[in-house]
Structures are given as structure tokens and as C-alpha cells.
Length: 172
Image 1 (tube, rainbow, N blue to C red):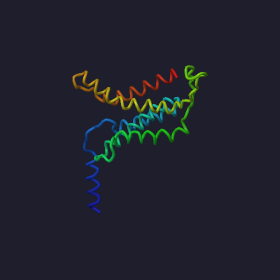
Image 2 (tube, rainbow, N blue to C red):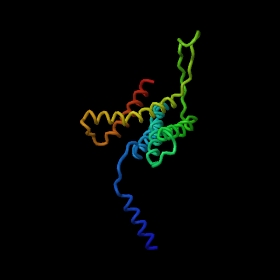
Image 3 (cartoon, rainbow, N blue to C red):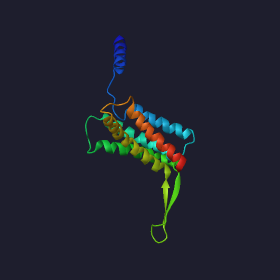
Image 4 (cartoon, one colour):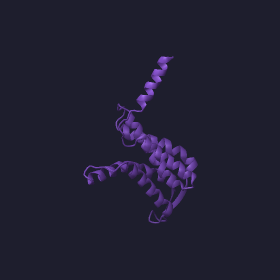
């Protein structure tokens, strides 16, 4: 019984040791998910919610890819991000789907009307923004001579997502 108590205390102490922070960490992933949930509860449109859920899904896939030490598939990181996106966004379509139509008068003799799922478009935008944010963070650090602001990656990521959602809420 005493050995189990010592083992538990040792594991608790080991969990307090600092580790290296990586892009798409659990904090960023959870942050995107919490913001999406909060947005839906506040009555934000499905396209904006899709932005946050798409970002959450891609970030989760990239985070899981970093946990795997061995590469089992070619382009495993990208495959996991896509798998995470598909398995997160597609099941939620029945709950959050919002369709709109777009008329293209130049398409064919009589034009063509396309049906667009706003939630899916928002999810794709969010996924692209989460992939773009580390690139922008590196560019900003290079412009500053290699120096980074505190929480720079998180600020850029959430700033991009919130800006995109606000622009969409007020324009679309």
C-alpha cells in the first residue's frame, strides 16, 4: 500500500515538470473549441461557428500528429489533419448546416444556381487560417530579428479566427 502511495506521489511530481511548447498545443486546440462552443451559445451564425470548429479540428489533427513519434504513412501529418477535419465537421453538418444559394449568370446559357453550405465553408476557412497562423508568426518573428512577443502564436491564431468571424458576421 505504501509503494502505491509513493508511486502516485512520484507520478504527480513528474507531471509538474515543464516540457517544451509546440505549435498547435492542447491549449490552442482547446481554446478554438471553447470559442466555437461559446459562439454557438451566443447565437453567432453557423458560418462563424464553422470557422472555429474547422480551426479546432485541424489543430487537433496537427497536435495528434506531433504526438506520434513514428511515421506510419506518407504525409501522415496532413492525413491526420484532414481526418480530424472530416470526422469533426461532417457529423456536425446535420446540426449546424445553413445553406444559401449563389446565382452565376455567366455559367451556361441560362446561368447556374449553386447551393452552398455556410457551415462547411466556414470550417474550411478556419482550417486554412489555422494552417496560415504559424507561417505568419514566423514572418513576424523574422521581421523583428528573430524575437517573438509573449504568446505570439496564440494571439495571431485567435486574432485571425476572431477577425474572420467578425467580418463574416457583419458582411455575409
